[in-house]
Image (cartoon, rainbow, N blue to C red; front, side, top):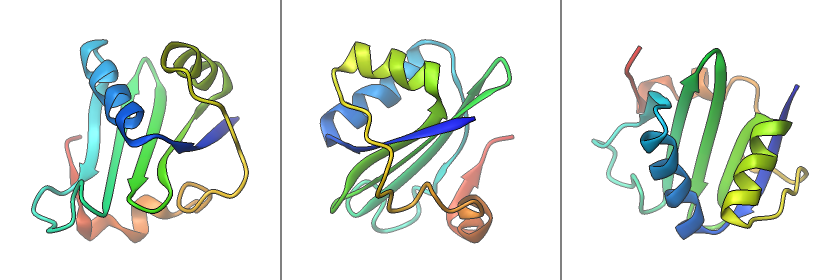
Length: 109
């Protein structure tokens, strides 16, 4: 079962992205860099490793959300000192988020 952490500070959010890349998580998809608001108003990434998936969304109003296993969220929150709040998500509660945004996403698989 996946859990969702919300309200993750922008600096921490982008540090987590860097951490995942450095620790050999594969980037599967991201909000396309051709979108004028990438990293300004909105951003989205999905990473995978050993069958596990981490989905991350950021916007300039609500900051970061991360959807992952409970174990992975606890690991990340311990490393990056953020609290796990799992209610009130803006994006990651939507089961078809990737499909609904597919024309705005760059896929690497």
